[in-house]
Image 1 (cartoon, rainbow, N blue to C red):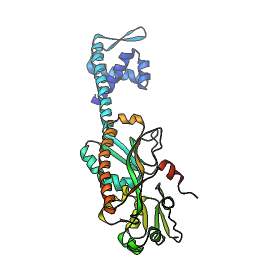
Image 2: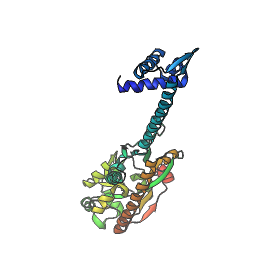
Image 3: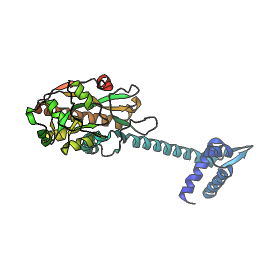
Image 4: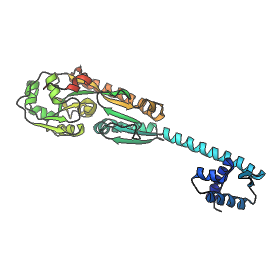
Length: 328
């Protein structure tokens, strides 16, 4: 008899011994009573002993059967507990993460290798998608969500602020009139690049700064911040973008502020979001601590950039001002 059949026969035997009935054991195992009876007989033939005797309608264990039952029940219980523990260990070492695409590619992606080095035994799954996670239907532990943070049913912790300002390549900025031209003159001559999913759009930025761009009919609307940023890098216009996304290009000088005399609009925009119960997961806690450290480093980097260009902040209430946008 094959070893696999031995285990199968013991499983059937243990169920009969525990239940005292072939029929009840068969219902528990979702097989027929004849299949259970056959497995018990095979086990008896292999061992060369009688495991049960009949007492009325019930099956009663023999002395040898009682000894085998005690041993097999203990062994099966230990196997079941080991399987549960392994499953729990596996779960604590897996992190399913959703992140908005541009933030995932431009900010999170370059830093993830450090998290992998810190937690080499973790299984990491990253889903880059713009839509928020449905935690009741999707196998996600954590969502790095872009928005105002108004999700009362969830645990929400701010990760990074958006710090929005107009940016262009040095060559394109020079074509707009250089330092002698004022903000309105520069932007009237520019092609304005918008990101469709950004909370702060050109119309709001212009209105909030009291600027009118009346002669400009050239504009581009991109579906992703990364696409809008690339167009500005290629010298095709002025992008209204966040230092959360564009800090490396500004630091390298490939992009420069177009209106350094106007404030940088600052507001919380990237959030760690999950149901409160997910905070009990070790993977979630480790990732939350890890990303908080990198966020602090990013804040220091951005502060240095703003000091370099003489930029000042203007705090914007995303939940009210940006939600309503510029007046019609």
